[in-house]
Image 1 (cartoon, chains in turn yellow, blue):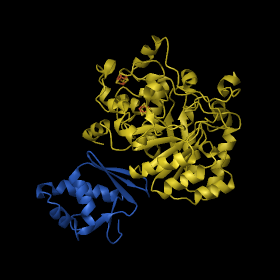
Image 2 (image 1 turned 180 degrees about the vertical axis):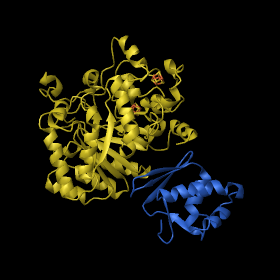
Image 3 (image 1 turned 135 degrees about the vertical axis):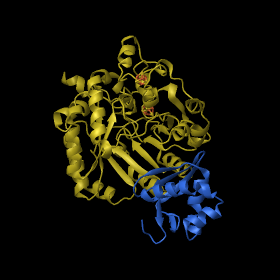
Image 4 (image 1 turned 60 degrees about the vertical axis):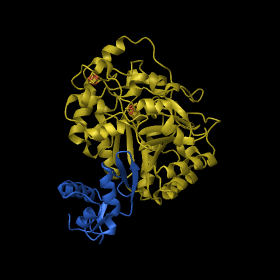
Length: 371
Length: 89
Ligand code: SF4
Ligand code: SF4
């Protein structure tokens, strides 16, 4: 990507490239790092009619595809009608699921659809590693869903991994697992969002492990999807493949289950709420005119990173990671490979809390229950 | 490339943007940037002409810029955004 194009993207687009739509806050699991603190359905959830109206708007904006997530999106009874409506209107669907609702019939139905990609979340190549983060039984559930998709001839689904301190040594095994299914591996960064705000400090890869991830991606990452996860590691040298910029509000945004629009899926907080699809003008007006998005499309200050020789490569890292660890937005990423983040973190006394918590009562995050 | 007959792949959609356009291939899921409005005009009119050269002429593209268009169009064939009118890649 040429520099001028990155500048263009920073200035924003007429419509997002990477739009995530969390369909519901309801979820059967209670993963310790859930970016949306999901569990209970929100009574204000968009109705089927409202969802269809949003899709029609996205069609008119020529949004090529959407990333559907949650919560567990398949919990919604109108999941298939919503997906069908999107695809029938030329909007490809990529959706993330924990696999619990992929029975044989659903697998067949999914396999019969065009322009549909599925990501099954898995955070360990064995049950103990995965279940410590995602909950008891979730490893078996995910593997069963993969078996069913493979059995139904779905083709290359994706296995989506959030890399943590505990699974970073399993990257080769994840790749082998993906290969065994003819699947594609997706590896993303743990961010301190949602319930991740509480688990990040003990789950996020250490500085040495950041280098390990970088080296692994450099050597073996050409087939691996990473989105915008690891551009902060580009400060280590040769740039990694992937989107090497923070696209929040510029090319990326989130529509949450109640129709609120945020700059990115990892910043569910009032400070990054741009508006709602329920307001007059709908999503289009929010995307094009909201004050927040306009300001994000202005040139950003490098702050404390300005004197760093790696700023062009790393751009100071991820806004969400800084925000929810209490760091200034115009300074180093908490996982700055130069160690600046750790130094800055040492001086943090308080950090913003996520805006909403839909955690089911009694569903104590697994990691802490095990201790 | 200049003497070939090309057209947009039937599974590709083109969306105008301030810098030019985005092209998305629903089949291979690739997103491609058309980085200049002239490039967008050329890509959109390819199927009205027998060869790429004819298209460039019709779009009023200065001959001095043809090599760079040639390279960009070759990339677009590579990513299957463009195909030969005979369906050949
Ligand atoms: S805030 Fe972080 S997660 Fe969100 S778009 Fe920017 S880099 Fe990506
Ligand atoms: S100081 Fe800032 S720009 Fe430099 S490596 Fe750290 S986060 Fe990146």
